[in-house]
Amino acid sequence: MVAVGLFATFVLLLAIRVPITAAIGVAVAGALIASGFAGNLWIIPMKVLEAAGNSSLLAIPFFVLAGNLMNAVGMTERIFNFANALVGHFRAGLAQVNVLASVMLAGGTGAAVADIAGLGAVEIKAMRERGYKPAFAAAITTVSAIVAPFIPPSVPLVVYSFLANVSVARMFLAGIVPAFLIAGALMVFNRFLATRQDFPREPRASLGEIWRHALTGAAALIAPAIIMAGILTGTTTASEAGVLACAYILLLGFLFGTLTWGTLIKATTETMLITSMIMIIIGFANSMGWLLAIEQVPQTLAATIPDLVDSAFFFLLVTILGMLIIGCFIDGVTIKLLLVPILLPLVDSYGIDRVHFGIVVQMSIILGIATPPLGIGLYIVSRIAAVPVEEVVRSVIPYFIPLTAVLVLLAGFPQISLWLPDLLMGPR
Image (tube, rainbow, N blue to C red):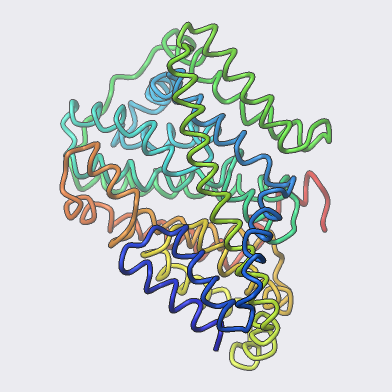
């Protein structure tokens, strides 16, 4: 009953638009009082500090800073121009460029919202000038950003690694093949749409133009390579790799002449704001997890649900459906913090690999950025494109066909996620 009251209070507070950090804190405090811990509310700040002081989470601010610095030093336009030189001449040219540019930028940001905010203005402006409908330009900008959390450095995958006690390196490697599967599915669907609509093509770039854009655009791709090389070789921890990536991006900004004190202060300020919000949520969720463990909620579910759901795949489908619904109303980090600790005993009882489960969960959750009523991606691109949210939603809906197909493939075929980490790091 305490768990039910906790989640009911949390959902009610969200419904009346209480900020999510306050909603979690109030819900946990209320649940502690209801559980007889009224004189021990000091447990909450203790658990917040315990989570914030976890060394495995130290990578988060550096990965966030790397993404903000990449936007600040003007790498987004260079990445867009490089992608345009490579695939702009394809059918549905700039729609394909949109997807490829998101894959490239994800190596610097690792977050869907940062991808939309960083590339959105460049992509939508270019597409409008070439005759694409603004609502379609906004829609493809939103769904292409879904690839971002699967490409290192990924803050969402770092958070999951912390919650599930799995290697950050394995999670990063596990996300790479799904990322390209998502991008490929979107590009194939763009090609299909191009047979039904008259999308303009860009002129084919010469080898000289491709080389020129590659020199500047591809430089951004070295940042995630630094992170993965450092982690996989054991030369650096994830946090140290993040520091090296930040130093490399600062060097790029200096060489390109785009690094100023103003851009550096802006990137640092945004990093502090984003990191503090993430860490507060993680801290409150840690106290919530402690309370649920005391009430033995995970153990109860682990003993009950296998009697109702008799296969691992059906359990994954039920989990996916629940995450898709919840993702319409709550952001991804919060969903993971609330549900992953509860579901892990079930994951283990069904024999599901925790890394595979993390990728399925991430794919289920990230679709929420493009799902009404609270899909944050929809509102960001709506503001950038100056298009009503309703029009963006209508253009986004068809893209759920390829995205849902990818989600089912990821759930049904674990090796899509596990092949690369098993190849490079060995089976667990």
